[in-house]
Amino acid sequence: MGETEIQKTWRREARVAGEVGTVLLDQSLPQVEVRLPRNLAELAVAAWERDDGEGPLDPETYEQSRQRNHAGTLALIGLSITERGRWEGDEVVVELDPVFIGNAVDAADDLPSN
Image 1 (cartoon, helix red, strand yellow):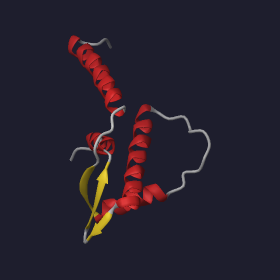
Image 2 (cartoon, rainbow, N blue to C red; image 1 turned 90 degrees about the vertical axis):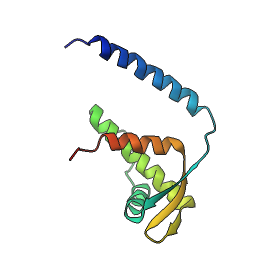
Image 3 (cartoon, rainbow, N blue to C red; image 1 turned 30 degrees about the vertical axis):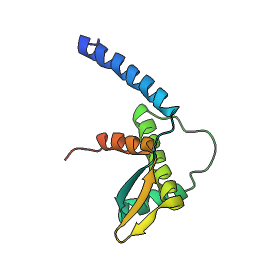
Image 4 (cartoon, helix red, strand yellow; image 1 turned 135 degrees about the horizontal axis):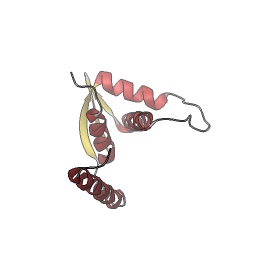
């Protein structure tokens, strides 16, 4: 199936968005303080503490690669919580790199709709 004109435009704009991201990655961005529910914070810490072993990755589909990247983001959020999280009742307060926040929001787009 060929691309429509709007799909071609979106592909070009997606590339530009990636180029913007490349520029932003070279900049020192401020950390953002966020609050996460305890249950999600504990799952993030568990993801950080899990040992996935070493060695080459198994072959994976594009969807599996996205899931692995989302899981990696969760683990890095868990590392942030471990290093500098402040537990307050049913929440944890932690400063996160804005890249982690963006990646987590991106992962939200992949959640099944109800």
